[in-house]
Each structure stands twice: as structure tokens, then as C-alpha cells.
Length: 98
Image (cartoon, rainbow, N blue to C red; front, side, top):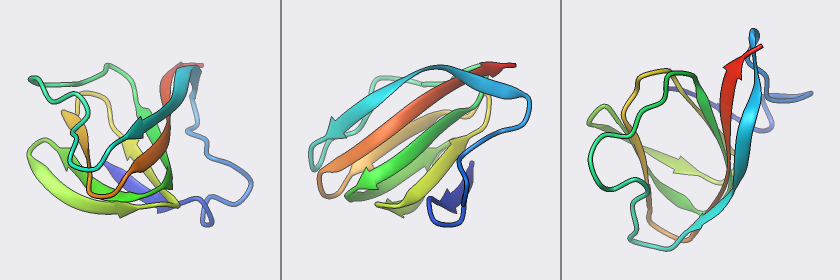
């Protein structure tokens, strides 16, 4: 996983060689975990724009904190889950090769 912030991304969040295939906005209540049943992976990157809230991101069993304003780039094949400490609002983008 790569981490940045919305402020550091400047003109926009991009990954060379990829385009957005699908996405959405999700709200995760405190104490909930996204994709809690089993492994959750994708063959292409996924980007989470954390709009508000605080939580923990689980990547291949490792856990890191996140907060509103963070950008999380999940690499292909990484098992990933978000865990909300406070209510988390996120935009998620599934990418595909351009």
C-alpha cells in the first residue's frame, strides 16, 4: 500500500497507465470493518480517498492508522480491509489498465 494526502496530490490523484473503471462513495459506521469475510483482493490497484473520519487499514495482515485527507493506494493482489474508529466516509476507485 502507498499512502499520501489529498493536499500532497496537488492537481489530482492519478496512477500512470491506469484509468478509473468504477467507484463510489461509502460510509462505514464506527466499529465496522469493510469486506470482513475472508480475503479481499483485486487484480488492479484501488484508491481510497478518505473524506472524513479515522480508522485502521488492514493490508496483508499489517495494520496502519488513517484519517480524513489521506489517500490510500492498494496495490494489485493486496488483501485489504478498512476498519472505522469513528464514522468514515470514503470515495473508492477501482482502476483498470488504460
